[in-house]
Image 1 (cartoon, rainbow, N blue to C red):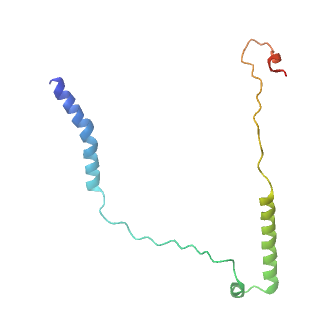
Image 2 (spheres, rainbow, N blue to C red):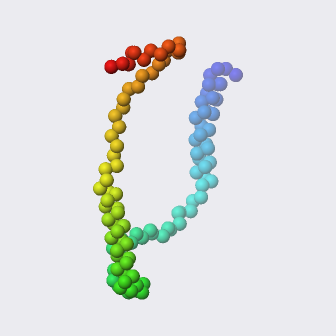
Length: 111
């Protein structure tokens, strides 16, 4: 077989094999349309109201205790938000002794 035919056969194998694999995969893939999915509903309603409290059977004292806990939690969250948690770090060069002769040559970094 001459060199020209070997090169042509190599190109056919290298270029046509992926195309054939893609075509075979497309033919064997399911043709069913995707099934219908249920929508995700996000409830953006405000916090529970008095009507919800009455439904839950909360007494006035229980509602006040719950509101007090919420207020404390909100105040704690506000205090946490007020803190400045950012630390400023500035890099400082440190002396590095790269000569492994056992000498302590610290005088090169003295100020």
